Length: 413
Image 1 (cartoon, helix red, strand yellow):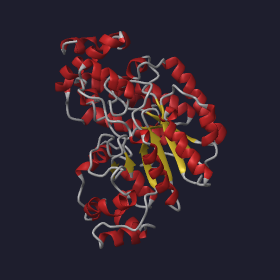
Image 2: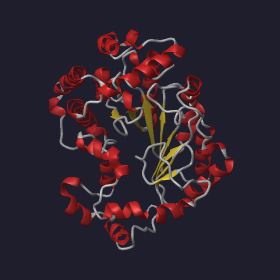
Image 3: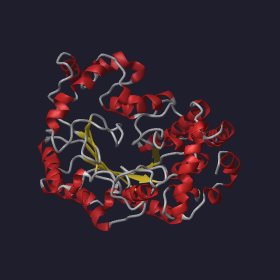
Image 4: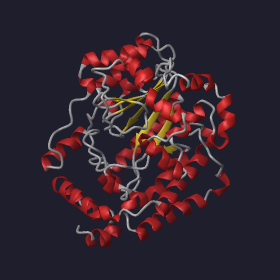
């Protein structure tokens, strides 16, 4: 399940943050939604019919990236390469059968959540959306890119937060709660939910969150340490200084120091840590440096999908020669560690398979760069966007990527 920043209930954690539905925490019983209103999606999947809402996972599968679809199948013992055999032996086989014969209904409760706390954020990443960053929303509104600010987040209403917590409290065996923002570490609702769960002794679910390397809160660390298992997601695009431009207004040198600190903290508490990256056309050529850092520190790099919006930030917007150059750099890095390559690493949390997974993940971007459809027609939109933002940020992409000057100038920069 996912609850979006504006309180919409959607049927999968891989659904986008701007997904619109008729079901909102303000007007819908969450358990009713999960058991009954989601039935149409279950029924389609049980009948082997692809869902248009699942296109992110299908695209990841196409390029060899480990999609959320594959991760969730692995959790219930279903392996795509041996689908029929593993389906009947799955611990959820009876639940699948019940749902199939009851029009997608289930008696289960939602145990795995992605919780979007709102767009309250102290960063304005250039590839982000106003629905996910209040700071970027203000910029885009002032520049005329949007005509109104996103509605207030559901977490700004204490009654809705309490309603959500009560659902979590009522589920006997929660498994996973992943919090994102905005920047969750500065959102009061994050700590409030953690405090309530701890107060009733509900510390068994895995607590995950993604932070942008601008905040290190000792009080939050203490709260998290009360839970049995914590997954820390760290947002950074590259170790190259273009990260300053992409994750404005961060200082990448300071961010790397914070990253090292989080790695030490995760090691101290035996937490799982993943680097969360959103490769764009501006970072893809330096992605190999981030993979090398992760490889040396035995840390996973994980992206939830290939970037969709804004569409003009996709790596596929690069001219073909630039795409192939970036692909070759990544392939050269992969070739350095051929001995660590394994087939189909699905458990991205297994520290014994981290390096194999990194090589597999890097290979998915090689495949993407080599095979994804050309989208250079989006360059004019990109140029217009970055020129407007640069006019208020007083920066310039060519100061970070002078090697991009020819094709950016030719597109009107």
